[in-house]
Length: 430
Image 1 (cartoon, rainbow, N blue to C red):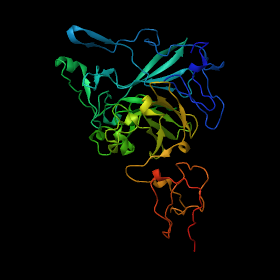
Image 2 (image 1 turned 180 degrees about the horizontal axis):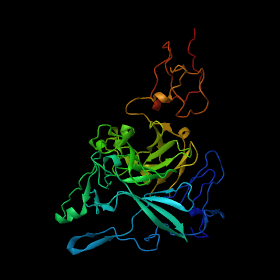
Image 3 (image 1 turned 90 degrees about the vertical axis):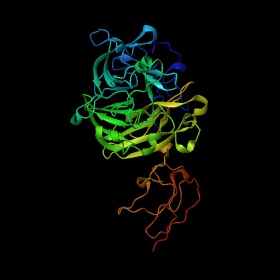
Image 4 (image 1 turned 120 degrees about the vertical axis):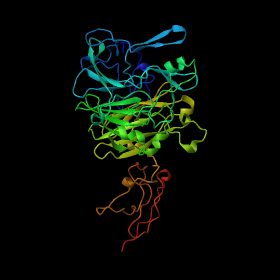
């Protein structure tokens, strides 16, 4: 960002306020009123001052030579459209332990809005990829490219940007449509179809990548081969082509069209992935209401030791007025993270933590077993004799559990959390 940029356009966090330039990310430190980062600050980071401008993406390789065009797409009347660059701006992630290096992620490839309301794909052979970049002399140079591939044990087949069988989304094939005189022709589905959106780079060189087709979360090694995948579809025929290591909540399959797991991050201790859905789910009970006009979207955490998941509701700011959607997610500490909502107006970014959200109900159970208090014997304990005067966190039960003498009422769903400050009767003891 050039020196002299007005403070209102700077990327910053301010006590009591949440603001940023459109589509930018504000970094917050949980519980601290101080400004954490400000791009107009006079300090050096990795050899670059925050006021030093640099071009993020150049159509050059590390030796300065230009990137070859991806393709030339034929159009009506003998016209052609050249596709240049490689579009690694879907997500960015720092390279752990390597100063001046970062990774950029492509999405499913070049696409555009089609006249029939679908998306149209111009390069069906495109392979989603990760680019490694190096900052040199004010430029971000592409050092190498890692293409996404299936498991080595299954032949390491290249991923594609085409839709998988799990999604109902239809994408038009531009070339086939033109050849058919303008009649829309959908692209063929692919079990390796992926629309990559969120990126996490690991110290061991591997990557976690989220997707907005399924949505899926996939672990790739340093060479781009799939190490494992989490999916919301337990009985999908596409699972036979992947190494399924865990399952995401089934209701995520109700994601709105082209709005899946847009952001992905990892807690600093490396124990938990945190993903955010771009917008609310198109649940069956919404009827004709569009998910884009509903405030609660979902944040999903994945324990990387057990691959168990949790969901939390995250409220967008007035989505009916602004068309808000989440763009990115960044972990600041073990607990809180910062989300970057997308807006047609000025975007706002807000800190998120489990204590500031409500745990979302599961489609399988009305209450998470992990959220109930446990005794050493593994049984649910009786509720305490009084309720807290403050609002409980999602990890704290807000309804009674059952004791071994069945003296307490059945547990209530998480959405029926009680806020009463009155004293609760204690469970009788013998």
